Length: 338
Image (cartoon, rainbow, N blue to C red):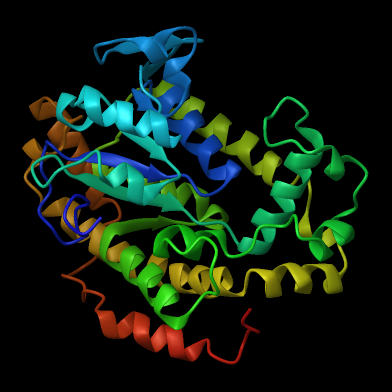
């Protein structure tokens, strides 16, 4: 990550590839709907290895249900190794790479062909509730467990089946041991330095930030209408299993089991507020040739008009390491560690 993922304040290059860190089912659905379906951008995840495409000897774009994918798998470890061997980063074919294993996927990239990280971070309690219902209902999924079928959320929260601090563990690469202060600081530092933060509770604002960060600006009215329709469907999806329907005691158990992720989520909210001006200022001051998807002078002019609609008045203050250290200590005592 240190060398192959670009820092937030690092000059953008046309050789860079956006990497969506897939942390929740909702986040994955957003990117698929908004960018793959509506925008017709080319994605790399695990959909491109359907059929026998996982055995292709050369990297290429394929079509699956009318959408464009690269014939690689960027979700599973063996697929990531194959994507590296085929030269995914150097090919420039993927508009967006979707990955849940952020450290492993960073190994595909190089200092000359860097990845640029962005994500949607869901409230960990909401994520746990959503995951419970998915595991309970998704009989077609390999992750489905018959134990979940007869369980209530209350029973699930009290069991060993519920995930615990998945985000901090993924970023700190501590998947089994007791989480430490250092693990949380590592996770915070990666988000601060490397990641554009989006929040599901501010979905349209988050998508707009991703748009201007990567030049994903849509000028076709039909595409914009598709996006607005997708937002409506995604909001409905969010409300399928409202967290408020469950007892405070159950939600408190889920919060305690995800105490470190709660800290990271609160820090992500802090970053979301702080990044607004920074992203718009950067978009205004980045050479337009650095945006892979803006190809004509008309594209450049319309992109700048879009950016200026939300432009801050002056250069923003950059977030420093001290910011996340202050945030870390401000949360001490609010949660019970493992």
